[in-house]
Structure formats: structure tokens, C-alpha cells
Image (tube, rainbow, N blue to C red):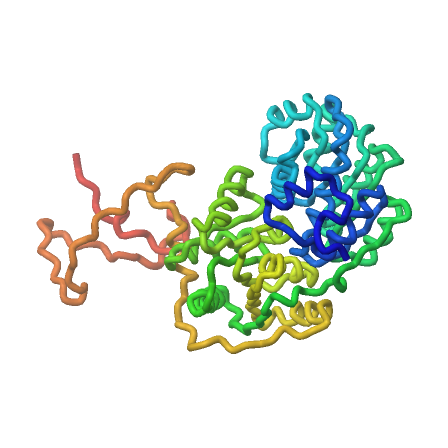
Length: 462
């Protein structure tokens, strides 16, 4: 294996950019993949997350693209990503390592205006980074011609196919020239996906730098058994966060988008710096939240699995699985958000009694048990399930999308009703009973229950 990047066949411009970024020694996947990409080989690259897969195709692509020039609406290379976040981060890699090049890079993702993307495409894009849906939208609008694509990269291939992109991938491959170079990169490669690679790749070279579905040795994994009620589970998470030594920041994963929002609000109410990230957020909000987390303005990022494959933040100290993932492969990707690039990290999974079957599936997949630890102390009997509902309920006079009015001033203390004596009423007529039972079925008020007392009071004669 090469001891530095200079022995991999990369151009001087690329090597200088890598050195300026502070990297001196290639990772295993980079050392094996880069020379093969430069030889125009088709590749299936399997490596656990955090091992440098992105640079293993970005660096040789930059070298290959130094000769030639893109024409309008005809990109020279195409990189497909399963999520907007991952596509944006690949774009950042091209900007970082391609700073000595004059290459045009187009990013086609949802949530961004077509007009801005069209300007880049009309000038000609050397590199097109896209999610499948937006790329096909632009193709159908006549903004892209794919006949000039020389290199196709399908990144996070298993996730791409798991998310239902198989028809889109097949269609896109049909639009590309048959004589092209195709690169598959993924952390896992289930058998059903291996069957599909025969349709996309020609005589591929398989590179596997780590056992499939393995987890990084730099990650300390823990399993904590917790109660099944949501409020008890939230209390357990808060206690774990407060008691964790060396916690700088953390990503907390939930299985459902609605639980992401609920948990993020609950953590905020209990004094934590937290925000949610899920697929229903608009792109601007998602990018702002990610930026706050990357720049340490935000300590806790509560996320759904849409973020599991798309985040490349080097210094995440902890990952918490608030929900055990229902798909065992997602466990590998979730905890891979920490312990990246040789750093140490901690991954804590909270397992309710009903989630035992998912834990069994994970241990079977990774071929080892997750060490079980006891939670320190006794869980406080805090039930914050009702409090969130009260806090989320809009106050009277609040309009949808508006700002809630200021809370009214605290009312003056009053004596208990048992000791309170009501003042004499000016009317001598006694009040009707607050609730009157036995209403006639023919009553205009129906027979479903008692009539409110205020409706039984005598009217004023005018």
C-alpha cells in the first residue's frame, strides 16, 4: 500500500490540494481504489463508513478531468447520491480538493430553485452531483443531455436501492452511453444488490477493505435497557447525556420523523441545546441546522435515518440510538457518524423491551454482542408526556403561522375553594342547579347529557 498520495498516480494539482487540506497518508480504500479508477476500471468498493470512500473517487476524477472541457448541458461525469446532505458534502469535497482546477460543478438537489441550477448547466458542468429525482426532473425539462458522461458514480449504493430508487437508477443508466466507467461505493452490499451490479458494471474489480457490515474498532458501543414508555425513555436519555464524560456533541437517531420533532422539543424544554433534522424540513432549514451543528452552535442533533448516510462531520463525539433501528444495516451507518478518520467515539443504544428482536438482528449482522451497561442512578419519575402536549397546543387568539401572544400575567393567589365564601347575590332568585339530569329526549339540546347551568338562568325581560 502506498505510504503517501504521490505514489497513486494523481496529478500534481490534486496532490498539492490534498497536502493543503492536511492529509498525508491515504486510507486503505483510497490506496486500492484510486489507481484502479485512473486505469478506467469499473469498481465495487466496500468499506465501512468514515474510511474515506468519497475521496477515493473524487481525487482520481479530478485528475482525469484535467484534460477536456464540458459543453453546455452535457456533463462529463455524474455522481448520484441518496440524500441532499450527502450530495452537498460531495460538492464540498470537489471544492476543497479541486481548488487548483477550473472545473464547473453542478449540484442538483431538491429544495433549491431550478433557475440557479440551470445557469450552471447552461455554462457546461464537468461534474454533475445529483439526487435521482431532481436529476430526472431536469432531464425531462430538457436541461441535461447525458450522452457525454464518461464516469458514473453510484455512492451509498445499498441505501440508494433500499430507498426505492431502483427504477430511477435503471432509467438513468439507460440514458447514459454504454461505454462508460461505473463506480459503486457502499458500506454494505446485500445479495440482492450484488445481482443488480451485473447490469450496471462491466467486469468490475471488487475492493473490500473491511468485512461487510463491520463496525469501526474506534467506536465504543454500549447497550442500555430502558423502560418502554416514551416519557420514561426520554428521561433515561437525558440522564445518560448529563452523565456522559467527554461528550462534546452528539447525534441522536429516531426511527420516525414525528418522534424527531417531539424529542428535539423535549430536550430544548429541559435546557439542552438541541434541534431536529428530518426529511420533511425544507432545504434551507436543513442546511442551517447542519451548519449550526458543524460550527458547535448546536450540541445535540436529533435526526431520522435521512441523516445517517449524509453526514460527514469529523468530530462527533457521541451517537445515541434513541430508537433501535428496525433495519440492522442502519445500525452500522448510524454509529459510523462517530469514530471517524481514526478518532475515538461512543455509540449508546437505548433498547426498550419491545426492541429486543432488533438488537438480536444487529448482533447477528455485526457478528458480536453489544456490551450491556447499567444506567447510573435511578430514573427520576418525570412524566413529560403531558407537558409537551400542553406546550404544543396553540393559545387562544394565535393564528396558524403567527406568533403566540405573550403569556398573561400570573393571577393573584386566591384562597382554596373550600375556604372561600361567596358574596351574597343581589338577586333573590336562587340559581339553578349547575347540571340538570334527566332532560327530555325532545329537548332541543338532545339527550346526550346535562344542560349547562348558564342556559337555565331566567332571561331578562325587556
